[in-house]
Image 1 (cartoon, rainbow, N blue to C red):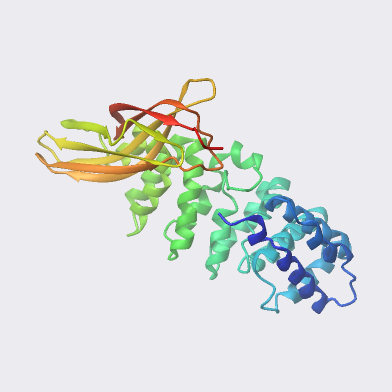
Image 2 (cartoon, helix red, strand yellow):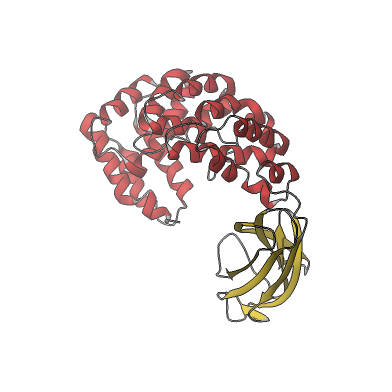
Length: 367
């Protein structure tokens, strides 16, 4: 993941000031010009808010004047990249304050090809969900794939990095028509967003997500199965029976598993644990397998907490066997803290657990 400075950098904020001065030389832009010197040590979201507030302080009051300035800046190819993030946020704030929803959303759609406006869209959605969605619905027919993706991505219930919109959490089905309009989209960029959006819904209402996916598979495009597999990935990891059955992963009758066998009995943080197992189809029917594995991590209080990791899918004919291996990394990451002690690794195939092996994780010499 890039750093905050690699995204909304001091250079990009300086360049933003230059772009605005070129189209509105009468503005002093005092706060915007001072912002680069205040970015050090700030996280990305903090940088975005700082520059947004600087823009709002420097630009004329109301929505109309800032729309005129930003539209003029769009004629400059240099008006692009991460500098657009605080611009879209400023547009959203002023448009909502001035009750200029439709005008502000139109400008957001134009800005999104320079850098996505999905995060600024949350301000509109929070202020008036239905009014905003009425405009967003029209974006699904845009000739610009960036705008079509914005319709799906910006309305996700659990959009990463973005603030939560209560209405999207409380009314999971409210964006269904947007997904229906885009699920067959010609652009993989758009379809990927649709899959992630449906995955978000699966966390809120699993039955709804499975029902939607089932309808799509009943009238598929050539790309539908891949989209649905990606959309239901969280439910597959959670061994949801409806999602497993929908994708053809029935209870694996006749499956015999040997393992998992660990390469070593102990591993340190920063190293990888290698393991392998064998799967044998002893039944009379072909088996379609969704194979995951579960690492039960030791928590600070000494209890175990499971985390499911996707491994592979495999189809075994009657009598067929397969040996599958994996190296699981214990490289330190910001979203997980490792604690020493006896951990457990087990297999999860079509929602059923198979095998269980223990190993010791050491944190000595790590910070």
